[in-house]
Image (tube, rainbow, N blue to C red):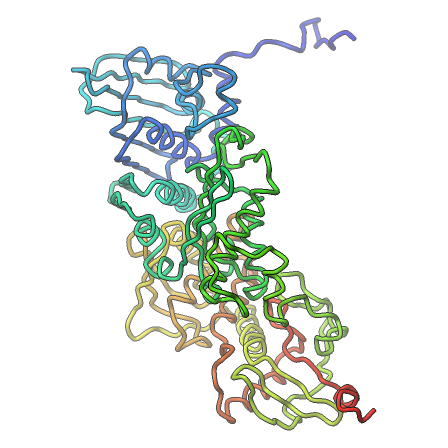
Length: 600
């Protein structure tokens, strides 16, 4: 088959210019400033750095600098590092099957240099003088001896300035900073023995000193509160080891942003490992809730392929089923050994029951999803998908008035027992109150924005830097949801007002839940148009706020509070579930009761 030819007879297939090749390659490696930060920091860590300093301006679009105290490079190696496919980490094809480094020094540098102005300054410990190279749009414009401390410093300016089409797809500086902060947090969790300093727009933003105890680094990066809620996890099978920390079942988030996963010390966002973690907690947490976990998987280098994704975010295991099973067993063992599961023994993780045995020991009410007959009047309204607010396509008239029913009382400090003519109803006080709060918040938000109530004393809430960035990025949306807050450094926010309907609730719990929802919305690419009346993430945020503010299971209610909660169900549009899909009430028909007692 002959090749098609362009007008005038010129061949359509041609060899591309080297600079254009690098710019195309950069699209695979450098998606945004955080991608460049990731590559440069990984190079520093592979060079044996014990201290890494990162500087960012304008979210990294204007300027990125990474300085390390690693081994440094000779002038010859520095020149080679800026050539495509030059690396110190591979010697032969077989090395691709047993990669033990973060990346290949030099592979990303020419890609970054092709879409920016880059300066590399480096010096080995035994050299009297350092060496500097400057590159603009992929072309070396200067190289010379230069004064330098041992190690390497790489500066990247005006990222994507020569590629406007790429640059216009970047988000605001606050959002881009959030992506870099998130990856730096993962790198810091992976290597607690490395000191990290981060500056943002000319001021100190983050300092994570080197520590020996991984839990100390978790407390520094995620907060003391998160660290205090974790239990240790460890299980070894054959050549594979799973270790780290995972949250207790009474501590959970509204999204999966608290999952930090590592393979051979490399931060990953691996779907297999994530599924293993979420699946274990599926029977322990309310639907739509997720754990916090910092989990490391260590396997032989030839048992995992880390080169299946251009940015090395994903990996491929030689035996994925075995790894999935190992992670699940490790987590179940850690949770069961501390008595969190009913009927659990004090067996150590190494003497763990099978997955089926562990599932069988779970409480009966979480052993399976409820059938359609278990949810009161469920057939009157379509069932929501997991994690989505329960909404009908059309308004559904309430088939019953709770205020007309006889209140028997509260049982198990969780359920209200109500008597109708032909049945008993069990009302879940948390699901019912959550539904009431959600409907009121949503109605107020749609009408004029949620009414705010100022705090007498502003509250300071510690958060991960990426969470602070998300709240700042969506400050207008947060204000419309009833939150008045501002950043307090890079790891906290000051809360000055909360939604009036939620007054008295913990500002920290509400703000953390809101931050999780906004980060999750960013990850899914949900964006609000300026001045828009509705936000794609608003319903989920309102549902999270309602959940965190509702009366909890296990919380005793006096008779007046019980009655008020039932009456409030008559003041909102009827829905059989809470916003996260759990039933508000379950009926026990008279005929069924009489059958159980042998009367029928």
